Length: 288
Image (cartoon, rainbow, N blue to C red):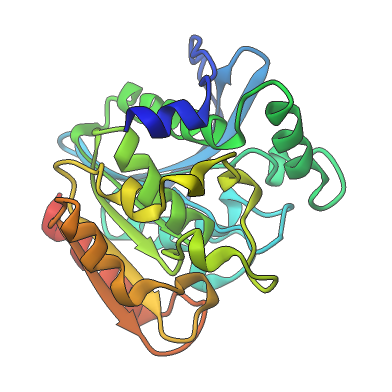
């Protein structure tokens, strides 16, 4: 892990959250609050947190990371069901099942997208690379600050925090628990592709995961092997380009000492079907 951290470069400095609730909407079985907090000085994050009604005790929470899909105008709003693909509304569905769900905008998406499509993401990568930093360190930092925010909420059982994501969110579901043991269970949907299989024009490497020199000594199995005390479920698609390399990934992870990983392979491409979501939810429930 020390070498991976060295490659990521310096992480941003945390600051006071200065959190506030911007609005609250009654969604029937739960309340959806739009909140804001500081990820670092000068960088304010907006997020949704969905809180089931009539809670009698601290409740498990799920960090729901949105997808990429080159839709920079959509982020947190898709996973809570306000726009985009209904199959991506897992924060909404889990809130209806009684979980607290949390969905922030990743940098360069929705309210953190300040330029034409894609320009914000490129900018956020470039300005860090020339300073010896990485965008990966920033997005990991932001996720960990999101966990800080969850822990600040009295409704949340801090010992029962899970993580769920599809595509970009699915890749973050592999990285975040390797860096923060507060994540007690994680589900990665259709984004377990390794670096070796990403060197093609139809996939490529997402800006957030561009880490200079990473492939010289590491791949995604090295990251997964660092996950401790956190059951991990990986969904892969037989015809999904973002699942390439799934065939031997589990063997490589097990060989490096992490046997706390399950994989389920589904027919089809890059999707999060009702069947896949039901399996994800069951895994979260069984481990929280």
